[in-house]
Length: 120
Image 1: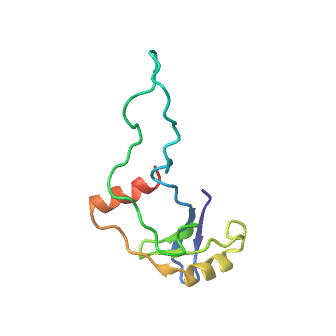
Image 2 (image 1 turned 90 degrees about the vertical axis):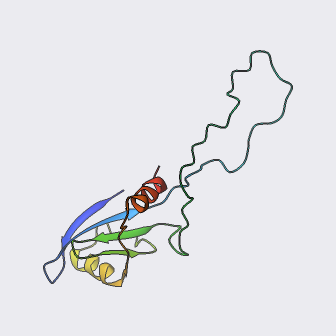
């Protein structure tokens, strides 16, 4: 994850970083095959995947990741992630920020936990 800080033309300091979500449950299919039981089978009998909370649902266009802009005043998202955002001039980064849509900030501890689960 890359990270940049810049000031826009109004003097507001923004932080920018890319977000590429990962699946909360990596294994979609059971890969084990049924075979005759072995006396010394060391595999655990239960499924060890950890799934906590609800599965995150991403709006169309966000599943490939987004560029997040955050200042004290607001938070914004831009998808898809521009390929030059890490090395472009601050004026271009400000232009990307202006194109981004406003994103709600989580208001409860449960919402913060759901967001944290996306990146585990």
